[in-house]
Length: 452
Image 1 (tube, rainbow, N blue to C red):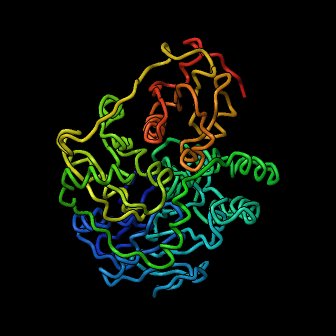
Image 2: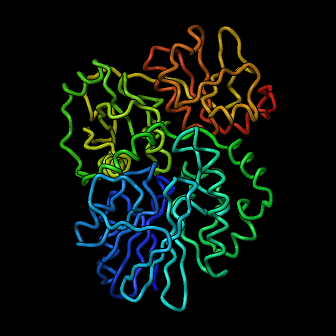
Image 3: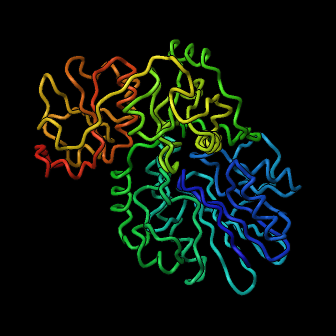
């Protein structure tokens, strides 16, 4: 048995190609299936089965398209009310993939109908746990509804234990979530691999002997998750189609100016330093960088499915289009080039100051307001005295709560989210300064702190 991992660090997820040298199973494929297709060609195998551990809340699946393309059986829990033909599978059912046996194990918790899969070649096993048992944690349990969270948390506690009982101790564990995904219920372990036995000794879902304590602690530590999650499950139940990953022809200068003047969302992908120094007036900053934060925050902050125009190098635009397709944001327009002069010569430009903590006023006043755009739980754990907290993902709907006078000194934990926030605030007519620095350095620079 060979297991090939297809990593999507931009969303903190992994898909898997499992084969016996001839026949292959794919588990939890992302929508951009060309990566999997390349792995299949390299391995010289045929996909006979595609399986979902659950109806995903954090990305659009490529499972249906992949199964159709290969004439493969598409394994989806028989209890999931999907709108397309699938091969229904339920707890304890076994299917053969060449010489491999694949057994479904009911593991509710992340969703009601969640399944894990134990794959065996007769000598060794591998466990594919989806959003159930993760490295050091478990999948979050609050994505279905508030009313179901406690029940699902209890289910998650039991499911983790069932997987340990069903699998051999040294069996490798392959979760879908937990590598930076917001689907994790807490900070997952940074390790790259693990076994069932290691998790039995280290994972709090398995080491906590008190179910009541586990349930209360997990629920208390659940933090905010991206707003676009609300759209993923419906898309996956309907059966998503293919994504268009081509870079479109660049929007011309006059049309780009019109879009800016009309208040459309024009997204600058350059680094936040370049944006602060010079950008098209009305554009907003979502730094692409390595892509690790881009997709989650753009999908969380901007209104769902509003028209987008991306500004950046051809490479960044191409990567951004791929990343956005994974969360159902399709076919954005674009203008490619290295900066404002190439995108729209003669269009008005803007800038704002970018500073570190040594230049920041020590606390808020009527003339200088410290605006903290971290999550509420981060703010409650510790913040600058007098700071106003409006999380970046709440900023657009709460713009009326932003102080109306004085300069806004905007910070987050590292500078990425505050770069987004500063651009949104300037677009709304506010006087902003971007504090592009690590929050952990604020106290040493003289900012008075309030501990949580």
